[in-house]
Image 1 (cartoon, rainbow, N blue to C red):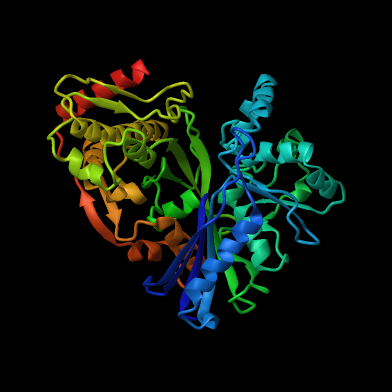
Image 2 (image 1 turned 90 degrees about the vertical axis):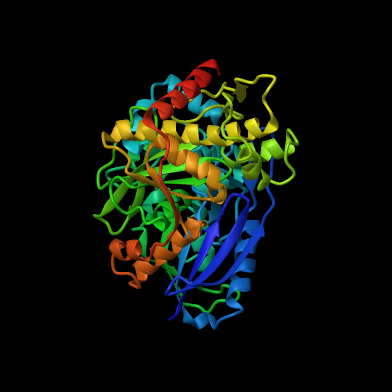
Length: 490
């Protein structure tokens, strides 16, 4: 058995990755699928489109090998998106409600008015927000007749994308998930590790609709009837996408952190075997479970805008033709000449939590050029991540020693150097930047015994470049003061 197959199922597309035991990439394939926006603020996926994309990408990568030599399959997925299907017929009962969907905002407001946010925060580590899966399930049970009918008949299966894919890969024989995904539903107890009766009653969701929760690394199911694959291949690793990136970055010890620079920025800080309750409204989440007793936790903070700011600079302002041009443009000036950019294009996330904030350039003069704006934009991305990481340090009461970085914008050397400078810690950029898929590979390999423990994962991780801070403390302090003044103005 020579290969591991990873399925990285994202918000806009699916990637299949095939590697050998030495982590050599044998093949990779991507396929986008349609997004559905039935009403303003609503976002849906057709689960059949997701499955079709998975089948296509799997078929593309296994052409080059004998698929009987695949030792295991790992899955990583967009987390809070919720699917509904019939346990007996395996038929989809509706579209999936995507994590970006805001249709349950009024439900969340009613819950807050009843004083329920405190108990949700205490039991789940989450905020009361439409982002998470629980209120999506409540809305579907109230508004979609087929979902409601299947629930009455005891035939309803609800689950995040990992559950749906595992069900399809196993011809409906399995209805399972694991803790990093279950902990994003608002129905799963953060420390007792079960579907909570009180939370399920609050959400109007019978426990019977939720999947069985298994450790993140171990046997979930075996393939059955999957085009291009033989029956019986073990699915042995599942993680939500950001937790997969944490594992893919080998952030396996307490105090290690990663930042994924995508459309937004997602930061996870490994807090070890005990959850840390945030005083800055950061999320407390499960990182992974090696077995039923050995859980790792993380603090999570998200910045809504990262790479999306560069896209806006390109498409909205028309100041560059390609996103890759921003680094050379920004590097053509030695500083921003006092210009500060607050990337609050869709409000401010953690730790400020100001949904009404808007994006802003400050410090513009007659001498300001588009190069100064470009440099300020990149620095703004780093500033907001610094606020999140400093809040995490305060919650954990320990300093951040280093930060592992990945995602598309991590290729920008100017951004990475400024991030190291303004944080005052070194940044480690890996050779393989798409670490979510690698995390799924690691989880599957651990689940089947290719790697014996997490320390083996750390040994396989390879650095591409280390960015060391060069900014003097006084200069850093002045820069942060300018940033916080700009934040105050928003």
